[in-house]
Length: 83
Image: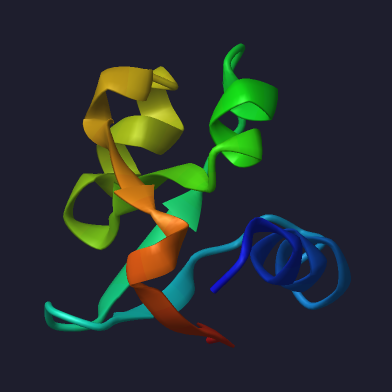
């Protein structure tokens, strides 16, 4: 997916910033939360996204520790689905 497609989904279909199902070309789908950090604009311009996996969501909600997120390439994302 392009960065415009991903951003459009996040703004229109996920305005409350809740976890979504992310499907990939080469790996199993995951449930994760897209997060905004200081480098969000730079990453978005390069079509990279910080996503906190479902297994780390509780810890992230408590601590807001951005190291719990991983960076994924938007090119590898094939579909985003609201839960």
